[in-house]
Length: 112
Length: 386
Image (cartoon, rainbow over all chains, first blue to last red; front, side):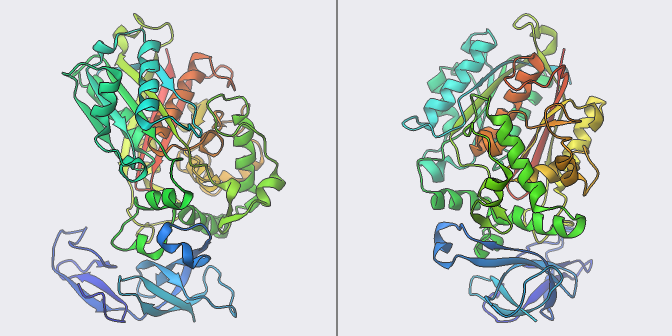
């Protein structure tokens, strides 16, 4: 699975059509391993969010930082980081768009 | 399956047990439970030990045989560590229950243990975060307080739950912990103190979060038909369930419902032939104030969205409609992760024996609800005085 590309994609089961966010190895509905990437628009809204102020060791240098569950236009949700922006208020329902993906696969969104 | 009862319980304080090792505290809880059951340690035929991450926190693995040898169990005894994050002891208790219920053995020992305070908060937070999916969600810098903070934000949005109602859970549970000698915090806190404590993961503050703690708890189980030979107050396990939830937050159908709790409660009520309104006292998994409110809804004590107002109306206090966490809960009593599930059973058994320091008068039926990780696993046990 190529996580290095700077696009947001989901996985669609070629057998039953079920849609997932990666990583996923088999379809949890029909067990088919035939999952194929499809591009997502990157548009969505904030489903819920928080600001982490006490972090695990490797994230201690980053606090405070925002994490959100983003509901994508195409249906699936994704846990993601929010870009730090002073100008807009983060709230449930606020529109967001895909900003970048780290090498380790972590997705970042920004307020649209 | 035959009926099973609890005939012995043991517990260390849930606290900072400085200078005491994981092996020592687990041993002391087990020996106390065996002595309480008035049986010999040689009578134990199977041993399940709940623990979450002793490898990360104290560098010690293979702890079931370690503790069994420290207690002096017979070499014929199968010893098994079980792990389900914060639900580890709930699962250990259920496995011991199943072995007796199935007739595989007569006397089973279940215990749980965690030693957490010998490492830094950041290291402990890292250990806790290892329960999350390391292939994606954990990489975002997600934390347990972060999970329940996001549950809280959404619960507030959908149902109008207030930050004050969350704070009232902390005030209530600290108040309950004052008289519990096993509790880590034995001081009252005011709503102002809760509201003014520092933010951990917005909107959750320090007093919305349970404290990292050391502790161990244990229980001895046997068939109900012989239980009265050992105790005047056997406590029957009338309902037992263990279920699976989602492994990640983004895959949850609803982030304001912890599905494994709903499923385990349904199974346990059906097995017991009881309904939520029959429960007199509950120890439920309040790792965060938000969790107790969600638990109280998912266990059927209140309608979805009514958990917050219920706290405000005093329905969850001792003397209220459903006394919730009279032992102080995780918030006041402490949360030695792998010990908590049996710590809850210990508190309920004391209540049903009429021996609890913060007694729910006349309680006959109690419920223990243990939740693991970000809602990945849950157990529900319903206990009844016989």
